[in-house]
Image (cartoon, rainbow over all chains, first blue to last red; front, side, top):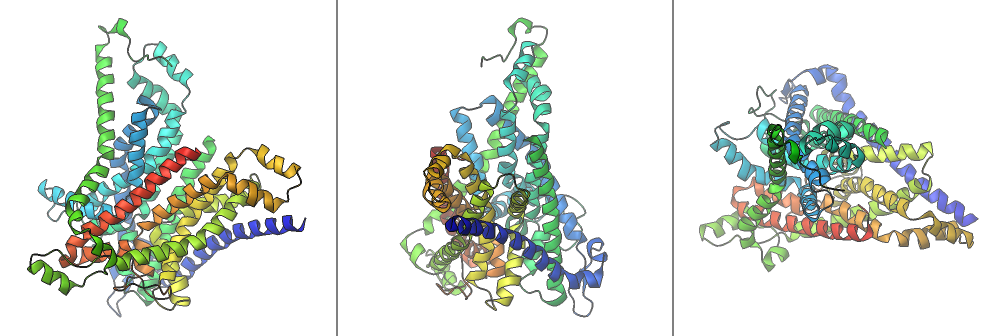
Length: 283
Length: 298
């Protein structure tokens, strides 16, 4: 009986550790961000001024928030045709076949490639391509990073939505086929409507991934502390500005970077929770 | 399930719909190929550019400095040196992270699978899922504030491994819970009915039965953190020598890639070290896939 109690206590304590870890994370970020929020107040979120000159220090995160949202939304839009096709390939056209298995493994491998390798590939292969095509002069910018991000989030968007598409009941599809629908019509009139919320959830989760990606974006976005004026303009995301400037930061600047980390933590937390909520409602 | 793709009878009147059907099918195939093509492009690029540098010295030598590289390039030789400091650092930090994350992860996973419907367990499950979505750079900041500032008073392998451990935790918790959920409750009940104490049921019945699933989860978590760069930049910093002291700055393969990338003279090494890292991560991924198929856990 004693052994049982000890085991239960040990299991409970380890779950408690997770709780403390999460609480500690929120506390530490809040604590570190307080000086920046005290100094700048709401202006920290609504100002795009980023001036580390001593004496005239002024920090606002607006340009990084815009940069993050712009790259992630664009990445999501670019990702949709690819991952929607791949999930139809896996969940409908070649459902449960060997070729689907191979494609599925390839999509999984995309998730296994380290972020920094994506960054290198983007820098040495995609960036020159963008320059050659004449989109912009240096090749850096929102569009280049979004393009790489869109590839990086394909596996997250595809694996869940292909499972959901697979689960659409055969009876529904067969009913449509028996009325003379083509497969394409079945996809758009039967499969997509009945798998809609699952597909949306998988894109939300993929979007959450894109928000926090650091290395590849840092290498490709051009690192300019301004609000990007167009899709081919350079900029900075919340993650990339932390990666770039954390090393030499102290005092107010450090606190501002921690505050950006806190904002990033909150935004990804909210986006992921919405995605999970939709998935939990499904099952 | 029968194939009911086209309706031949109505072909004449509805050919536009059939064409649309075919066009969409081609679009799906084409876009799917585009989606997976980066895997090939990246691997081929890495092999072409990087294979030249990979030899025994690459694994046993430490990274060269700019001067050595410049002389070698001037003489038309390949750059000497390797990534030994990165390899040892990566192993050290991933090992430390595993020591921290695996016990807590597995025990919490057991707790969650044993207490499915409790509100508290649900809260922990949700927290773990939110942790999984936290960007790795934020974990770097946290480990910097906790370990670098307060405990090791400087950049250290320990700080790096803490950020990696937090990344591994939710993955291990989830795979443990999913694996244990799939073990038939009859096995557990059989052991309990024989009067086996609870802790023995867990450690001698449940864990051995689900061992494959647990290992798969652990390997997957390791393969995810091996390529992590961002949190290590803020915590482990990097080092030009082989270091096994966990309170000192330490290098890692992805950190070396970042250093090589920033130094034009060491550019050739970027490709070979990326190839090395990719090869390692991909092999781990393939093992995970094989194991997952065998243990029917995904």
